[in-house]
Amino acid sequence: MKRAQKIILLGLTLILMCTISVSAYFLLVNQHLRKTLDNGYHPIKNEYHAAKKQDAESFLVMGLDNTIERKLGTTRTDAMMVITVNNKTKKITFCSLPRDSFVPIAAKNYRGNQRIEAAYTFDGPTASVNTVEKLLKIPIDHYCVFNFLSFIQFIDAIGGIDINVQHSFDGVTKDGPGAIHFDEGRQHVDGTKALSYARERHSDNDIMRGFRQQEIIQSVGKKLKSKDVVKNLTGIIDSFDNNIQTDITTDQLLKLIESGLIYNNYEKQRLTFDWRTFSNQGRSMVELYPDSIQYVSHELRVSLGIDKKDDRDKKSFVFHTNGQYLYQSDYSVQDEAAEEKESTSLNGNVYIGTPGNTETGTLPTVKTKNGFVP
Image 1 (cartoon, rainbow, N blue to C red):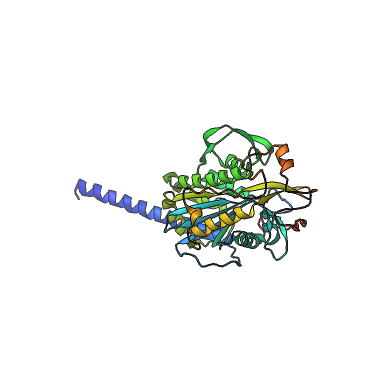
Image 2 (image 1 turned 45 degrees about the vertical axis):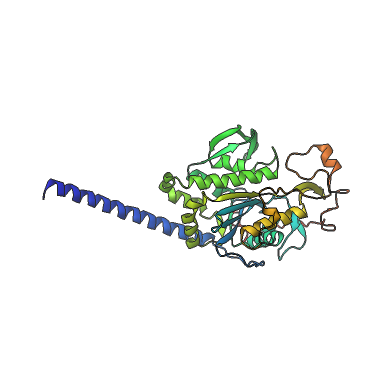
């Protein structure tokens, strides 16, 4: 055999070996992913139904404040975000819900208003999904719940992410307040620092907190486009093991991952509420103004193809609540004088937004598996 033929044969052999190795690796990864997701697969029964476009989907992403390490008596959703994806209009809409939003809870074990974070405590993801569906009048196609541990491990597994800190502040970690410092400006952070960044609300407010969480999701999307991420697929999957709860099947997730590469080119829309804080029985709550809920609901329904566009969807339109308060929105930290003057609490026990819904029951102590309520 001639030397040139030997070189060609050797080259083809190496290519074949690499192809077999890569195929075997991805087969192994696929099997690992299926096993991990099967462990966390938890379908639920949705109560809200509406006709929507087939090329549009909605997701409720939640982050828990409990893990096997923290061993809290109750498990609540520290973060809640609705994401809609419309493949026809090529648009992704983000909407963060303030965790202290005082809303009607749709749970079989509780009737009345509570902080929206507590819905999960009563009936797990079923109550959270149905509470959000009824509040915003949209169907939730899929949900996904992470705990703090999975978030940290996932960010570390993809090699960290880039964020743009708007102002310096001292964040919170498992070691307590002020355990970590953020300087203003663009920077690369690991999982622990990313979680602290996502949870921060004391240096500004819950609206900005929601924007930070949306920023993190978009930063993760950009990082997942990197070829370096492929090198640690097993580590990424391991971060989900026993740390995730979802009704998304493996096949659906693989399809989402495949589509995710084009999502970065989609138009992004960020929705937020007009709201203010008030005191109820000595506890801080968030009142979402009714007209603000109606506006956000409309925008989400438009994004899903349920509602048609109207004057509120013109680029020149900017929503402002017509609530009966001089201080109309809590976009910035209020001073004490403004809080006292515009308080929606009368004698600490009257909620103006929905009269009569002031009594809140105690949260039940629930036995959980790594923070997750079944």
